Amino acid sequence: KPRNKSPTADPEDAFAAKVPQSRLDDVYLDCFQGCQADGEAESLCTKTCKCAIDQIATLFTAEEFEKMLNDTAQNRMSPADNAKMGKISLACRVSPPPKT
Image (cartoon, rainbow, N blue to C red; front, side):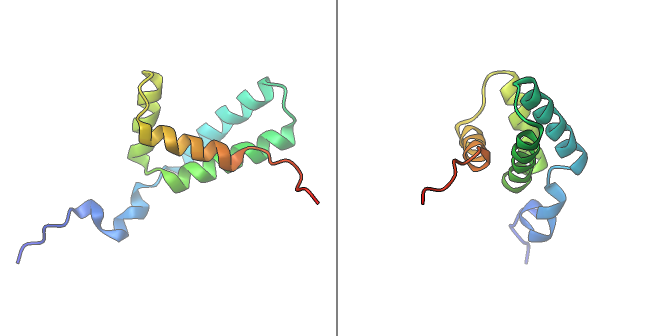
């Protein structure tokens, strides 16, 4: 009986499609340099950029991430990618101290 499932839908393949660490390292470096160029403190840049790459690794497959970067370069990010980047921005922005 033939299987109609796509081979990429196999859960064991899900991890193979993650954004490679070397790519995340590049994104971290770009983020960090941009953050410091904006005059932010090193500790804040480290925390924010680490959060961002952790979120990218969670939300995007390698293919999705590369497509999003290409789309962004051409000023045509999809609504879904835009929503993911908004989610990353919200998750990683510096929270004010909790009110007591």
